Amino acid sequence: MSGFAVRNRIREFRVQKAEMTQAALAEACGVTRQTIIALEAEKYSPSLELAFKLARSLERNLEEVFQYAEK
Amino acid sequence: MTKALRRTQVLLAMAALGAAGMFLGTDGWYGIDIGPVGSAVLYAALWLFVVHLARYSSEVFPEQWSPAEKQAWVAVVFMALVTFHVANLLLALPDLGAEADQLRNSATRPLWINLGMLIFGWIVIGSMVRKQDAAAVRLDERDLRIAHRASRFADGALALLIIWLVVALVTLPEQSRTWLRPLIAANVLISLLVARTLVENIYTVWRYRRERA
Image 1 (tube, rainbow over the protein chains, first blue to last red):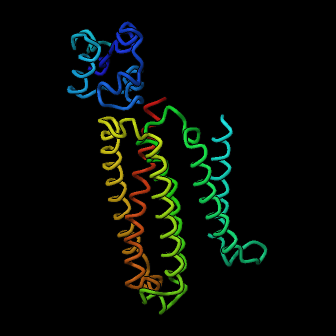
Image 2 (cartoon, each protein chain N blue to C red):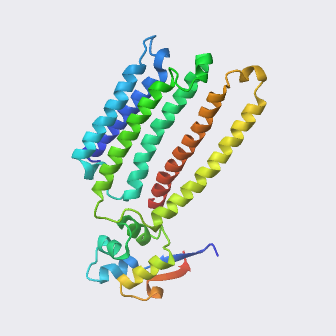
Image 3 (spheres, chains in turn red, purple):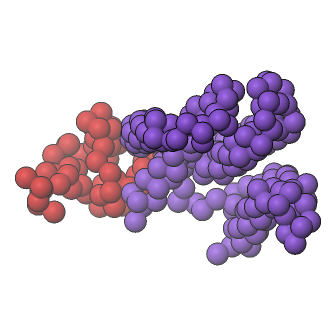
């Protein structure tokens, strides 16, 4: 159980989406840029609502952006 | 490290030196009362910081700090100064004897003036920092989660402090308790609340730092 964590591909999809900046993604989701930095570094696991907002802003499915996988 | 950041550190060191001078007070340095000098240095550092922040607002705080983290750092500095002033009062009160029973005495008067100046400075600096991030989101779920954790941690610390105080009062020999007058006990309780807020703010900045590492 402890060997698993929420992983994400936010950075990868953000760069693919016409080089979207962290600030632009933060504004679209209503969070600070520092939270996007923490998310991309996998130092912070978002709430379900924020996870949906991120997926929608990146035009991806939730499962594409977030995975519950081994560390 | 930028020049603005270095200047900030110099001003903080200056404030700490001033506070130390105030703390030594009449016991002083080679018999000289350096309390008023310390006070002047502390408040000069504070107002220089206000000027510094007004001129170099975007450079004083590192870019990777969120608006809530900046506010938490400002709170740590001011709460540390408030705690220091309250601790100074607690040390001075037992020496006043019967005068300590009066709400207005020679030790509380300067405290109220100093606290007023600190709160005013806090409001000014806090609003300057807020203005810096006017267009951005200032508080989000991550900040709220950290604030919630800090509050829980501070509540635990307060409970421990109260237990420690109760044990200390119960185990103190009766003759050592003569200094414990009602108003001193009231000030001790207020100082516990001040200490709780300081612990909460220190935990908050520590948490932000840890999440970045």
